Length: 408
Image (cartoon, rainbow, N blue to C red):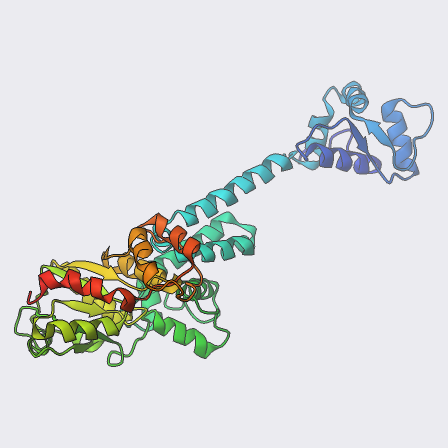
């Protein structure tokens, strides 16, 4: 059993607590206010300091004088004495600075993460998380939770897996990690709501709908992708259907179920152009008919079938080129498609936007703007001109680009 320090007297405990607290601030200390001291405490303090009268109940004591008195009494400075009596003296200022540094490093890591940088709309999500503070006040726990959310977001849109299956596959076999009401589920849904420009769902039905939009538990028959001019190789049913439709100058609508089991299928190795709006496909068919070059439509935000087909085409050697609307939503969709499929921009630069604006000088406002990773100047131009340019306005330019690929 450790011997008790000779100055560890009950009547002096308020004094040692006050000194310990002031030294633990990490700031310079010249005086310490102690108390309240009872009669015995005042007498003990007077004896320690060598006073000829009792101090008040809450005296203010010069630290230098107290240090000399303690040295005379036991041969150790006051810092050593309060450490022996009450435990280590902390540096709360340094600890606060360290915690601040940890927090700033956490948010910088998140803002610079690849999942965020390729879809800058998620910076709004980063801002929301930062405003909400740390999970249980811990940078480590917060980083772990966010890292799990980023793992899920990187895998979306999913391939139609049920939510527990997706969770088990991505999150160390924990099929309940994304259960409704968990912190992680809410974190991912918040990111999806920001990405899609919707409100955070408040009902279980709304949350299921948002998961479905991200390809979780998609209906394999209702998730479809529209394409024209698609002439894949192979004798599988999907390849044959696509070639028949292309040869007849018709569009083909492929379900997720078909794309998952296409049979023998080899995609084209040349360019495959992608549009956001089905009207551009209709105009292409009207112009090129059975000679229409390969064109795939996302129909707004792409579902699982769209991403599945585009990834398959890219894996088979096709070079993907994407065009969409010049408005806030269109830029976010474009960033999403490029991030998920490796597509390159097609007439989606700031110069393309500026050249198109005179066609609709009184066009609608582009709405909420987020950065375009492929051209940082684009959002600045849109913020300056505040005019949305939909694909149909520049359809003649797009069709002109396709002319050299007709019949391919």
